[in-house]
Structure formats: structure tokens, C-alpha cells
Amino acid sequence: MALDTQPRPTACLALADGTLFYGHGFGATGETTAELCFNTAMTGYQEIMTDPSYAGQVVTFTFPHIGNVGVNADDDETADPVAEGMVVKWDPTEPSNWRATENLAHWLASRGRIAIGGVDTRRLTRAIRQQGAPHVALAHDPQGNFDIAALVARARGFPGLVGLDLARDVTCAQSYRWDEMRWAWPEGYTRQAEPRFKVVAIDYGAKRNILRCLASVGCDVTVLPATATTDEVLAHAPDGLFLSNGPGDPAATGAYAVPMIREILDQSDMPLFGICLGHQMLALALGAKTVKMNHGHHGANHPVKDLETGKVEITSMNHGFAVDSQSLPEGVLETHVSLFDGSNCGIRLSDRPVYSVQYHPEASPGPQDSFYLFERFAREMEKRA
Image 1 (tube, rainbow, N blue to C red):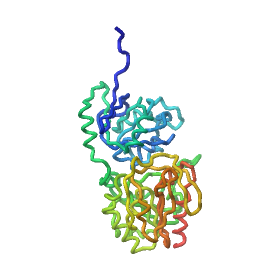
Image 2 (image 1 turned 180 degrees about the vertical axis):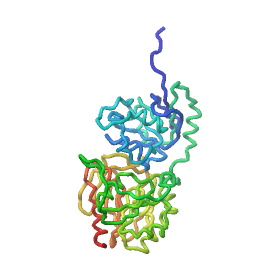
Image 3 (image 1 turned 135 degrees about the horizontal axis):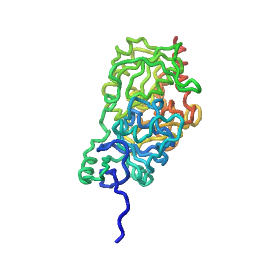
């Protein structure tokens, strides 16, 4: 009788409908539950895993070469990974890049994040597209011992992201200043020594590179927690207000964020700029609504059309909720739309320097297609100097 030489699976991904995917575990051991999404980016897996907007999610990478350039401290968007776990087709190889200081598997293990390799990610991605973002349980056990019934039950018990305020979990504990600018060859990261504008950035889960972009256009940035009040914002006498990206259901975060934004709009004419969750917070404050998407937009190759110029930008996106363009009130203009599905990707007030976008202009997928948004923010503040 032939012996079974197939290695025993050491990781299992269980979907709430009972579908199972087995593979090779790497990173941390244990179990986690989350919503499952897929990301189509070919690069930037470290930035994706450390993006606070991925809180509560396990990320399936559609590109198979994940881990091949290792990791390094410069590419973190926040101090530690925030995504709950990762799913990949091929196990990570040893890194081959001059910037690498650690391999992906060790980095994940030391930071408590579970990953599974050897998965048919095409099949999994099709399932997500057709059925919507499922709730899952991901387990890694080096001995390959899994209680399948318990894993499926855990996946079914995951509450989901609707109604969930995750910004409180990822926001800063206290305010801080930021002056580091964008990376540039050969100096790397440098400091903003001659800022022209004072900006308050509300941290709903801010990525470091967004703050670097603000500093690079001349901003002295003070970052405040997501729960900051109107008085706390105005106490800094800012020239502009920035609303950051972040995770979770915008309607839940809006319970405390929207009143502050409305008060700022009522009491001040300062320029206001929002990105991602910040875009959704502004839309809610202006009277629009948000909706949960079937599987969201996650990737670095999303075409977005600027309706005012006709220009098409290649953008980076990460959102599972969207602003309902049909709910935009009078005086709020739709400025950008996705060319994938026509969903809203930008708004502005018709008579004030208040605007926001759903995508990530700091992520350089174009690579510089959308940096003009930060420059516009600076110009609007300069007009009022």
C-alpha cells in the first residue's frame, strides 16, 4: 500500500457558510475571527498589513509573490500590523531586497498575526466577489489539529463590521506633533523645518504617509484622537482641519465625529480635507448617507475619474463602506467616481474649501496622480493666511 506523503495542513480558513480552505501556516499560531477581503495590489503588503483601515479584516492577496522583498521599519504605516491576518497563494520566500531587515514570517510571528499559504486565492476571490465579504475564522496549528465545527461556529459568531466603531481602537491615545516628510532619494525621510500652515489632523486610524504628505506641503501637523471636541480642535488655532482614514462602520464612528465636524463648519471657514473614513465623516456631517458594499474596494489599481477635469487617476483604495451619491444634499457636489462600479469617490462644497476623497492619494499608485489634493489643501490655506 502506498504511503501518504502529502504534508499535513498546518492552517485552516473556515468561512461562515462552512467552506474550508487548508494550507501552510506561518506567522503566529492560534486563531482569529474577522471579515475577509481581497487586495489586488502587486506591492505594499507591509503597508497594507499595518494600515489601521484594515482593523477587523483578514486580507487575501491576489498577487502570488507576497513576502519576497521582506519587511523593514520604514514601510510601516503604524507601529504594528492591524489587519487580523493574511491569506496568500505561495509561501513567502527568503527576502531578496537591499532594504529588507527581516522576513515576513518572523515579522508576523513576533507581532501576533496569523497567515496561511498554499491557498487557491483565485477561487477564494471569486467567492468573495459573488457572495460578499464573508465572516471567517483563521487558525494556525503546527500539529495540524483543528476543531472544524468550532472554527465554523466562531466564523458564524463574528458580529461583522456593520455598526462597529473601530476608530476608537486604532486612534492615538493622546495628541502629538508630526513633522516628518515623504521619503526621497538619497536623503530618505527628512523633517519639515519651515512650516507655513498649522493643521489639526483627526486620527481615525491615520497612516503615517498621509501625515508625511501634509508635512511635505508645508504643514505643521498636530494629531488629535478621534474623539477630539470642537474646543480641542480650535484651541490650536489651525489654518486647516484634516480628517484621516480609518476602519469600521462610518455611521458608528459618526455618532461622535459628525457633531464635531458640523460645529467646526458652523464656527470656522478654515479649509477642510478628508480621506477615506474622513471622506465618509464629512459626507455624513453634510447630510449624506453611507452604505455597506458587497466586497468593497481594496487595491492599488483602481481608476477614478475627476468629474470636474475629466482626468482619470490610478488610485489606491481600502474601504468596505461608501458614500451614497444619491443622498448628497444641495450644495454638495460629487467630484470623483470609480470607473469600476460608478460609486462615489469624492465630494466638495460648492462655495467653500471643504472637500474629501474616498481613495488614498498618499499611497502613490499612479504614482503621483493624486498628490495635487494635498497641494490644493495648502493653496486654500495660503489664500487665508
